Structures are given as C-alpha cells and as structure tokens.
Image 1 (spheres, one colour):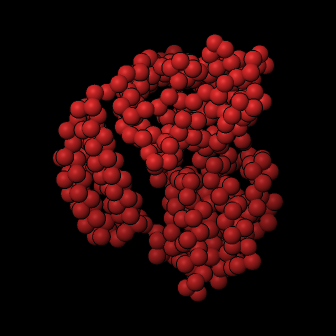
Image 2: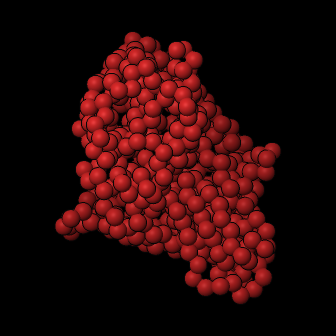
Image 3: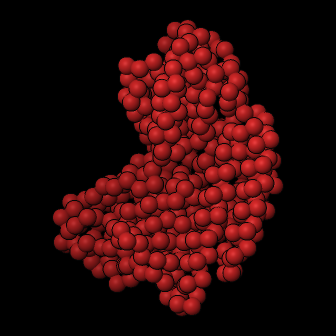
Length: 450
C-alpha cells in the first residue's frame, strides 16, 4: 500500500490561465488521430522544493513515443504509450545520480481531448499532458471551455486563433484544492498537424512544502507505421495488457487471502503471465515483458507479507481518541454498526481526491446503521480543519496520528471497514475512481447479512 508519487500528480496537471483575449473568431481544433501513427514527444521540467532549510532541485527529462494502434467504435483511438524518464536530484548542492525508468501503458483518446484511461494511466502524467481538452464548438472556443481529465479540472480560454490556436487554462487538482497551489500552462495547437506542438508550464505551492517549477513539452515528429509493423504491434499490445491486468488482479487478491491461498494464487498468476508474455514478438513489448517479469519476485514477497499481516477477519484494535473539537470517541461506541475508517492527511493529494466519493457514501447510507469517520494524522489540527471546510466533509474527523500504526496503515488514503461485531472485513488502500462502488458494495453486504 504505497501512496502515488507526488511527481505524478504534479506533472499530470500541466494546464492553466488566460493571459490575453482572443482577437479572431476561432475554428474548432481537433486532434488528428489515425491508426498507424507514431508520435514522438520530448518533455523537460525543473522542480524546486524546500523543507525548512533543505532545498532540492529535481530535473526531469522525458521521451514519449505514442503508437495509435486502432480506431474504436465510439470514436476514440487506442494509444499505446512508451515513456522513458530520467530524473536527477540536487539537494543542498549535492547532485545525486540520475534515475532512469521506462514504462508502457495505454489509454483511449478522443479527438476533442477526452481520455478514457486504463488502470495504468488513470493517475499518470501521460497522455493527459499531451492532449488537453479542446472546445466543443466555435462559440465555446470563443467564450472559454471547461473539462475534467485524469483528476484535473481545466478552465480554458483562447489567446489567439491564428496562425495557431493558442490557449491558456486554469487548473484545479487534488493538491491545489487544499495546498494553495497555482498552475498555469500555455498551449500552442498547430491546425495543420492537428496536435499541440508546444506547451510551457509554471506552477507553485506555498502550503507545507514550498515548491515551484517550470516545464515544457514539444512534439518532435509524427510518422506512419508500415502495415506489416502495425499488426504485430497491435497484437502484442492486446496480449501484454490483458496479461498484466489479469496478473495485477490476482496479486491484489492474494494480498487479502490466507498465506497458503496467496502462495497458490501467485504461482498460478506467474504461470499464466509467462505463457502469455512468451507470445510477444516486437522489441518494445518484449523489453516491457522482461521488466515486468523481473519484478515478480519482489511483488510476490510483498503480497505474501501482506497476506500474513492481513487484518481481515480479525477484531479491530480498540481505541479511544477525540474528534477535531475535543469530544471523546471510542470504537466501542459504534458496536452494532458498520464502521468505515478513512486515514488521511492534508498534503496527501490522493486522500483529497477520494473525499468527494466518501461524502457520497455518507449520502448513500444515510439513515442506516453505518458510521464513516475521517482519521486525520496531521500533527496540527488546523490542517484538518482547513480540509474539512474546504472539502465540505459530511462525516466526523478524529485525531488519529497514533492510530495509523495501531491499524498497520502504511499508505494513504487507507479505508478500513469494520462490521457490526467489531471485525475488520475489508481494507482499501489508495485512490480509485471506483472507490465509492467498491467500499459501498462491502457495506451493503454487511448490512444484508445482519
């Protein structure tokens, strides 16, 4: 249970604010996507952050290749994304060796910039940064447009329509809702090529960690893949992603199983993975398979450890604490009810992103024997109060800093569901766009069983 890297949400959200008014009636831009395209991009950004007297500069260079492998029946296009990152950090003048990573993923992209991400791209930088939302029609382009993509809300306005379509957008993310973050980006769309060809970004943050940075990305080339190369690439994409998603589902299930069952599940998962990935023929997917397979041993070890420490089916640790206003609260006070504990802290963007769904759960089970409690682990109660007000939380918030260790919470957000007899029945780690349905389903079954 590991919180998503902060850099992901920092970079995923590269789009912000108007500088000057439009000077001509715009045509409506659209991304010129087509099967067989290979798009190459280069991105670079520098991020400065300060914690007390300590200053770190992160220089990130990213090269991205996108293959459009098919047109979907709903008007979107399947995009395979191969992303190579090199990150170098300098802390108080001492430079650390650069760290290189390569990842391959996919998403479906519509010509107007709507994105249907896979689980691998849901919270990632690509492809959202390269395909910001475009206006619905000419009137909207002239007046400004809004859209939500990959957890980011864009409010865009036109700068100029000719010779290129240039716009700037204000951007709200799970971080800047509570962290006093600002983000701006200026985008240049080349109508002849049908893509954003260059963007310039600036962002800053003044709450908790003091941070600022600048970045750019640029389209390097667009070329057509030969038909005899596209077919095996598309086939490998289907095989690889199906195998990885099946394996990942079994890995997650193993973490909640008994150690013996987890071992059997992991052995079957590895066998299926080997069989599927052996079918791959293209160099990029064979390399991706090698990288993925090398991680199996570590992942399996972590899953077995999680299974051994799995609290599901065990009594929840008793506790007594206070709510944010100082009123005493005990877990025993809620015996006979389903209890949901949501562990969070102010600067956890994924915690903030989950809160609207948790508010919905409060509404879903209003009037039923269900208690939802925010478990805040910030040392300063002012941080909790700020989030409670900013996010309009509908559920009580408890002071829970010492309780995270008691419940073996090692990542945020973590939701723990406790049944009417005080037994832990589910642990949900991390943000998910389907969190409401997943946790709500567990609560519903416990109510039916009563």
